[in-house]
Image 1 (cartoon, rainbow, N blue to C red):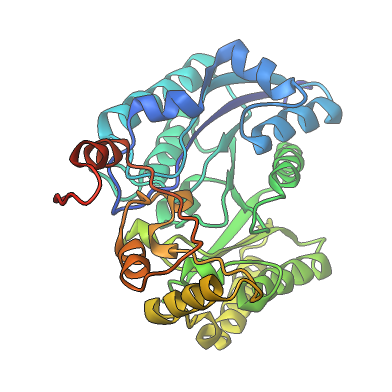
Image 2: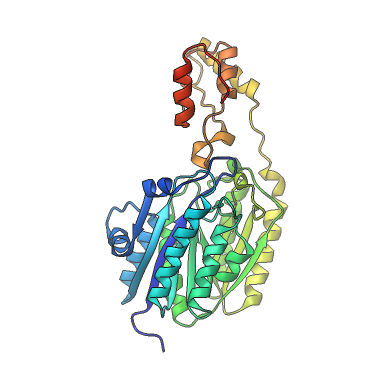
Length: 369
């Protein structure tokens, strides 16, 4: 018999890693979010909160669902950037695992992750952390993990967790709903239901610009998966279609489907195969044709000459700071200057050292970045 107030540990280490950007340091994590122990629990119950919304929603939903004993460890997160420094990752993972060991025995663990994290010496730190948590708590405690839909899911992540729950919206607006779902899933598993997961990774790494969910093949894939989940509500606990993050440049990159069933592995396998086949049939729609640099510059030049034309926004999607890039390439700027474009507002240079050196060189100067 489980106790009436289940003991549930809380933690998380969140980062979306761009393999082509400089490493993320401890300072990057502490600047965004680094909370432990009672402070983590207090912040999760605060409205509004400054921490990951899924963690807050998980805690508040668990509070509503009945008695429980929350046992917070460490929650830390950084803005999208390069791979996490290996030493900091080890220290943070050690802190989470040590907190879990101190809290034993446990009925469940909830981890708030991103899923596309790299470490400077490891392609799968998310899998490493979840696997270490499983080793700490043993086979019987439930492990529930929420993920960004840009997660690159590994076999280790699926094997170590009971259920992986991915976001369903991009831009991301459903973090609270996924935290609530994680709490409901935790209560379901604590009632004695056994999670049976099926994992399918397609040989398809979609460009990030094709992973919006309001329309297009990815939105259709998520809508189809959620409709099938509703139709099989008595059998299926969760269906997550994770688009992945190409700029992680990781062996685990690729659009993946994770289906978690109640008790029956065959049900999870059948639905995962069905969704994978459906998404694979749409694979050519993920090929996105972007405007070439010359065409984009021509649009900007035309707008500068004729203010009556519609305004033009040009995004350098590969060097997007929101996706962990440095925002410091100058190809677009050089092309605009060369074409004598006028009335242009340029932004997103986020490399402080590079900007400082440019100011030192001065107008008209040249230097190598």
